[in-house]
Image (cartoon, rainbow, N blue to C red; front, top):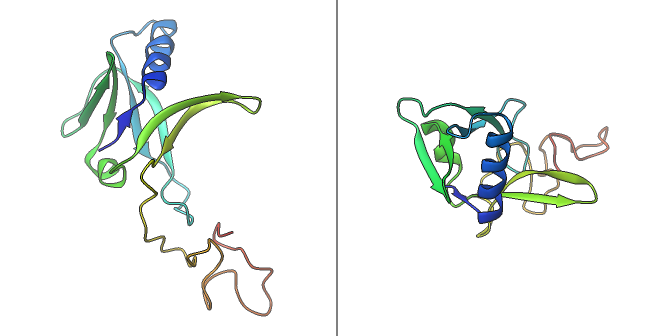
Length: 131
């Protein structure tokens, strides 16, 4: 299951307090837009309570809610928070390596598989978010 870093937990509490809902949590869910070779896309939103069947993960009083479908995709993941010259935001990382099995035509090097999307004589390569 996903864990929350201490830095992310502090930021969650800060955001929820600023929004006037310190008792709420963040919902992590699978977003739209396909998977690409790097795995599924996740989105985060404020939610006032856990839903039926949700997993609740807590660190330092900060809570995230994860539905069963999303939980299956977050095994070994870590919710962190970064701030650098490019901006700041929550990130979902896999400290022990990302799950394998991208099914979007990508090879082990991140490029398209032979015969997969984005490969072939008329292609510039890279399609399907490979590369």
